[in-house]
Amino acid sequence: MGKATVRDLRYNFRKIEARLRKGEEIEVHKRKTPIARLVPIPPKPTEYPDFAARAKRVFGPRKTKTTGTELVAEFRGEY
Image (cartoon, rainbow, N blue to C red):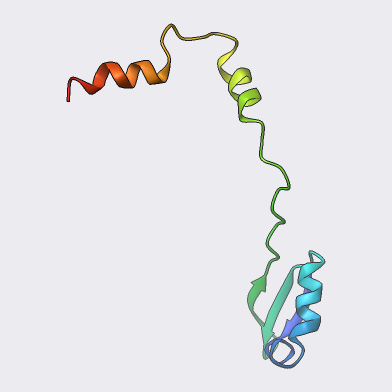
């Protein structure tokens, strides 16, 4: 974990930002006392998870007798 002072943040923010973009955590000090920790945000995933495969893994290969659309149409008349 790197260290930086409040003054460094004020005058050399570009350097600290570059360190954060590389994935380094930075502890911020004021008068030699740590007051904060800057943690980089993890990168966004490039792909969406395969929800169909996940559902198949959780629920197995079973299928329902009626579809969701049929259930909604059936219960619409009751309300």
